[in-house]
Image 1 (spheres, rainbow, N blue to C red):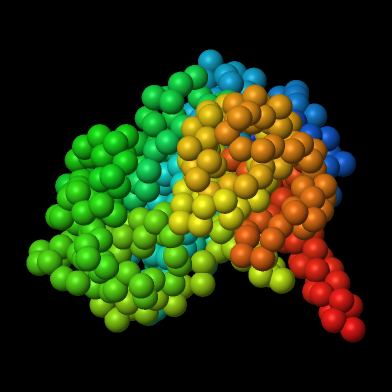
Image 2: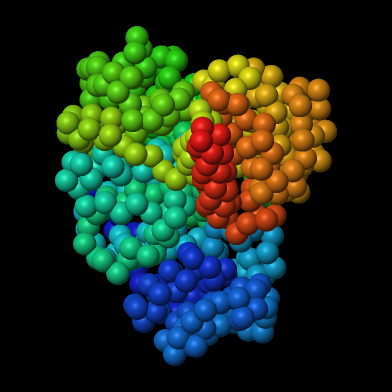
Length: 472
């Protein structure tokens, strides 16, 4: 697929730009704008004491508005740049729209800057309820092995703005959330991937339909020259009909004009003829959900003209990502798996696929995103021997799943891991796949996953010591 040609992407942004939300993406954008001589006003609801380097930002010319923001934050602003976590209902966002001040996301502004400063970029955007991080990283791995210069950016952990100090053309592979897509205007990826759309973030969106529409915006600015990689097995994703070339992927082989699985092989017809690309058993990551991720990555790679060898090597050697069905400890035949990124019901359900009957001790809970926990019941009855609930959502989970499987409230991860260590038997798996956000007890899912991994490793080590002492 050809590099981008977006002459309208970005004339220089007029000053000042007001940035709402001064965490990772807000600070990365502020840094990029200040480096280009743009006046910056940064605002956040938190107090100044919550931030480091406040004086350094002031010395660089940024005006800082904390505790609100309050007092003149939007006065004369050319636009309001919002970080992904800022809801459309935030007072500053509502005020900006009332005043006619454009409200744009960090993704949109960073994309405009990159397009204005370098010709020849290629843009790949991956969104979806589940699987988007793994798919994004897998595409980036394929392109790296093809010898491309790659920036892995967006919701996966490094804001797009953080890459703007390097102005050479690259393949930007971006994980984009529904929150980020709410505030795009011209953002146009040459390849857009929609992994699936299942209920999530219903604490932010009025309805599932609103959430799905936000996801579909990834295709909004594409043209007939671009490619849309869509999960044909997911009814909501499959319902989108973008202007761009539609390339389906299907684990069930439902459509065969894109990529699909059949008789133990991954197939692709993206380049015009059906070819067998790789045996499924050679995939680096196991599980039905990772087969879908691999098919999506293969479709994107074919659209981008990646060499066959690079595709095969990356599909078979990719190490995966932390906090996504990651084995973090094992001892005495007991395996501990960190799926802290499983922050919604569908993600947890997919994480449970493939385990033997009654072999999983599952840790559920955190901040409720208004998912329907009752949908987990059939899968729990198949593979889960006991559930431990933690966090704010514990009571809601217990109410929804009472009778489906034995449930024990643990409150926090320390107690959940301790009880799992007491009860687990050889051949079983202790799985953290919480079906909830982390923000009741942790800053993010990474911190939650790291805490679980440390607790699991300590429990596994204690188990090994106990076994060794018993042999003496």
